[in-house]
Image (tube, rainbow, N blue to C red; front, side, top):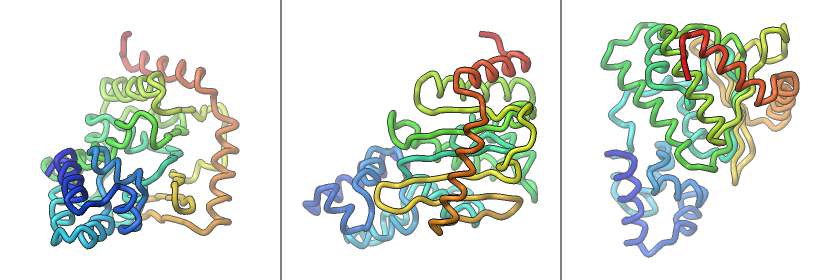
Length: 267
């Protein structure tokens, strides 16, 4: 079932039960905005969210069974919790050390990442399902306002020709269009900065309407969600320290356009 059809069906079941979005959100321990996004087809509930919705609406497991993405390649086990949180976040701030953040990737770039970086290697069909899952995550950007997304991208990410010059040019211009459309902010950490406190790993900071913020940190074959307040605050402070040393958005756009041109992109 596609996300739009799934959202429509959820709305029908909620209305049949005589519940408002707020009443359903309270009963299922979710936020009203998350229910709104699911019904609009912009987001997919986590497995646990779908289970609670089934329980509240007495839909006999249908919302779990037909949850979009059930027929696709599961994401890495260490990323499952982070992906569910990503769909609920009101603010997301990414730091990319090696690759463009997943929700900002083009289809061709995502395919190249999964082809070249996955180990053990993925077959074409499995890779196609994984790419589809990644593109589904990006549907949160179809809402013009929420979540608020900032991306702090190391210049090395833009210089590394993942997928080749054409794929990279298209990927970088995709970032440019998102910035120019005022949907995301992108700041480049220039190579001339030298060393900086975030250069040891990627991370994703997430804030929510109804729960404390978290941070997700990923390394090779591992990833961890942290919610301990003091540690989260330390990650936040480190992120903003590097953000202060990054290029302003105007200069970041100019650099991205220049790199895309070096890859062969023409306006």
